[in-house]
Image (cartoon, rainbow, N blue to C red; front, side, top):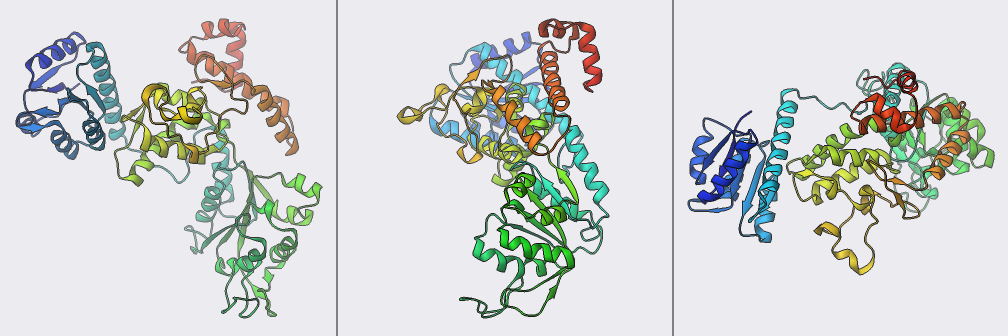
Length: 501
């Protein structure tokens, strides 16, 4: 491991930090001014740089900019006796790993440097084996099933109905189905046209889908091609199909049956060679029973059904998705990507995310803007994830820990319905989890699923065993004792549930 560089014009600070780090088996190199550091960077690079801000012959902020220009991934800890807002803001805007005001507790300083070293080593491993992110991310078995289905459907022209909760990525699946089909990049490269049928007013949706002739209604100054004509030779994605007005469902059925339709106000039939992919978060069978969705249209759309799992059903993917979205947010904002500690990641993975992947992405965007340090710790997470209720009323200006009161409202981070949480080892879980279990069972039953008992029991047992093994650091006998089951039972369950490493 490379040495830690300490830069401070105060010899006593250099001496104290150097001795403390040597006791911890770290190698150390000290400097009294930024000029010598810049010269040394020509031949060497530290594992971590710890620098004062105000020194004769140059500032730590200028040194920070110089170092980040040459080595963007190098953690830099900025320390100063001038604990003012401008110094803190300048440090973090410059990409500092952490801001350490003087006087500091020596143990705290050493632990902070240790964290920076660990992060630096992780960065080196990541840079040594870069992985290009695919168009869709997911290693959990439920997502692998989705990927296999997309692969099997890649050469098909069949209509697909994509179902799943809001925020699970239904449009991403539709785009992937198009991209890998003969109509997409794998063939003629026809267009992919998407329309959200729930977002367009009822009186405009017909024109939006099928187009209109000039003079068909007030304001129709020219003839307009609808989405079906625009998607000719490609794919038309009809999102939230369950919200389509009943009278328009008849027209859609006609197009799906024979490929013909009329523009609004038109008398000549139009033809369009379009593959339709529809999506909904609603239970269409229930909508059919209620009489608000045509049964014949349902059967026409439901040729192949592809269900996307909720994020809580693929928790193993949350760490990978979190790091990906933190990087994406940083690129969009033009800042250095935040990193997240294992403890904070455990809290994130334990949250249920009712808004699914979209909510996780919004959370990462919020953390990129609001987390005070380059490494996100559990205390930096919004209250909903750390098991404390969000502050209300006039006291919200200063929440515990001194963090700004801004919360990711746009990220859709609702507090538990009754405001209560139950403290457990690891993430805080809603006290009304039994009610949530009943809702999940009802959802599956409404969807016509079979073997609901087996499916939910497997998830419940797998969750218990995973948590116990994490708590005992993989010691199966200890985990079995804490769960109150026999060691043979836990071994058998690990094998049955596919939890082997």
